[in-house]
Length: 162
Image (cartoon, rainbow, N blue to C red; front, side, top):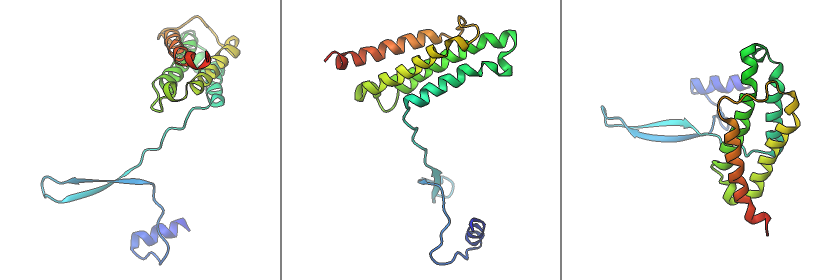
C-alpha cells in the first residue's frame, strides 16, 4: 500500500483522498541571490527531547556499569577507562539533564531534579561493586558530580525546609 502511494505521488496520479504521508517539516523561505526568486525549503522539525525519568536514569547508569564485561574493557588500559566513563555519564546526567536543562528543572520543579539526581546516585552506589578499578577518574567526573549535586541541593533546600 505504501509503495503504491509513493509511486502514485511520483507519477502525479494520486487518487482522490489519498495523500503521501510525510515527516513533520517547517517551511524555510529564502531569496536566491543570483535569480532573485523566493525559494521554499522543507526542513524536518526537530523532535523535543523526552523528559528524563528516574527509572530510565537508573537503568542507563546500571547498563553502563554492567558494560564492564565488554571486550573493550578487558585489556589493561581499557579497564582503566571503565570507571571514568561511568563517572562521566553520571556527571553528564546531573549537569546536562538537570542543572543546565532547557526545561529549567531547578527553578520550576526542584523536587523532580532531586529525584533524577537520587536515581543516578542510587544506581551508582547499588552497582559500585560491579565496577573494576573504581578509583580511576581521568576526566574529572567526580568533580562534576560533586558540583552538580551541590547546585541541586542548594536549589531544593528552601522547598524541603518548609
